[in-house]
Image 1: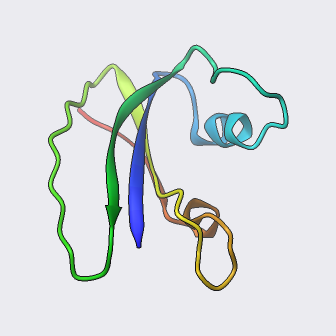
Image 2: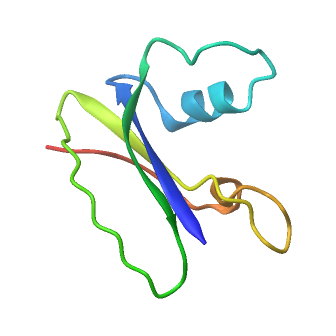
Image 3: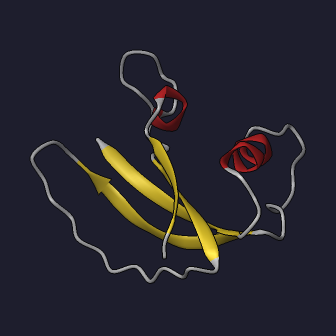
Length: 88
C-alpha cells in the first residue's frame, strides 16, 4: 500500500532542510518555503492511479510516501521511498 505527497520547495532549499523540518520536535506550521505540491490517495498492489500536477522551473520538489512499512512500522520515506527533483 502506498500514497504520495508532493512538496514544492522554494528554489535554494534542499531535501536535507525539508527532512529536518519534517522530523523536528517543534510543533507548528511548516516553514514558509514549503508548499503543497499535490497528493494522491492510498493505492494497493496491482492498482494504477493517475493525477495531473503542474511543475515550475522556479521550484524544487520532494515526492514522499508516508505509509508505514508493514514489517517495521517505519514510514516508507524513512526507508528510501522519496525523490528530490527540479524541472527545466
